[in-house]
Length: 367
Ligand code: KQY
Image (cartoon, rainbow, N blue to C red):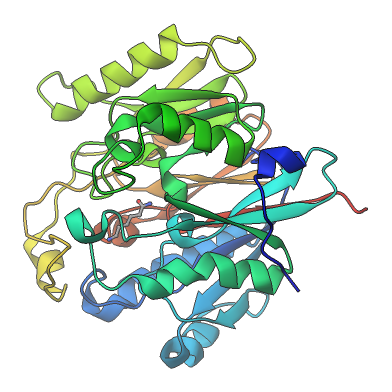
C-alpha cells in the first residue's frame, strides 16, 4: 500500500533518472474522446496499439482504459499487454502520469503526483474538467505500491527532460507561462525542481515547437540521448517560424555546460513537413471549446517526440520524405539501440506524439 510522504525527495536522496536508464514498464492510456481524436478515436486506437506492440518487444506495457472501452481495448491489444480499468479525461500519460524517482542506492522507487490542469487550466487549457486526469498519477502509484510525493505545483511530464546526472532541460515558454504557476518566479521554479527532482542545473530553452498546443513542451523539440548529448529538431528553411526557434535553442545548448560541466553534443534531427490538418481529418473531430482542429492548421510535428525504452527507440513516422533521415540520426545517436518507426500521424492529429502518450517506470535493483 502506498503512502503520501512528508518532506522533499532530495532530503531523502531520491532523484529522477534519465529515460535511458533501465525501465520496468511503460504506461499508456487508451484514446477515446471524440473532440480530440477523429472518427470516434478509432484510427488513433490503432496507432496506440502499434506503439504498444513495439514497446512490448522490450518492456512490459500497461494500458489504462475507461470502463466503456475495456472490451474494445482488450480485444485490440495482444494478451501480453496488461489492461487496467481507470477513469481519465484524455490519454496523455506523459503529462498526467506519475514522474518516478529512484533512491541513490537504486533500490527503492517513489513517485510524484504534480497538479495537472489540461495544459493551462482556465487561462488556456485544452478541456474542462480535468479532475480525472489529475488523479491518475496517485492511482497508478497506488497500483504500483510506490510511495507518493504530492507536489503542489502545476507541471506536465512532457515539459521536462532530465539526464539523470543533475541536469534538467525545459522551456521558458511553458514553465513560465501564466497558465501554470503564475505565483512562482523563475528562481522559485528552479529551486522547486531541484528539491523535487534531485537535479542541480536547469537549462532553459526559450521556446518549444512552433504552434504546439502545450505552450511549448520541451519533449516536442528536444530529447536527451544520455548525459552530455541531446537530439534537437532543426529546420533548414529560414522563412519558417521554426527556424529561429530552433536556432535560439541551439545557441543555448551550444553555450551552456551541463550539471557536471560537460559541453553538450547536439544531434540535429530534421523537421517533418511542415504538416497541416486536411479537411477530411478536421471534419472527423467533434468541435469543443479548447482544441482547435481546423483544416489547414499547422501541426506540431517533430521527430524528437520519441520514446527510449531499454534497448529500443520508438519514433514517429510522419513524413515519407524525411522519416529515413530521422532514423539515421537516431541510429547514430543511439548506436546500441534498435530504432523502430511507427506510423504516427493519427497521434499527431491529437496534439502530441509517442513520447507524450507514454510514461516509463524506471527499474530498481532487487533489494
Ligand atoms: O504533447 C503532449 N505532451 C500532450 C499533448 C496534449 C494535446 C491534447 N490535445
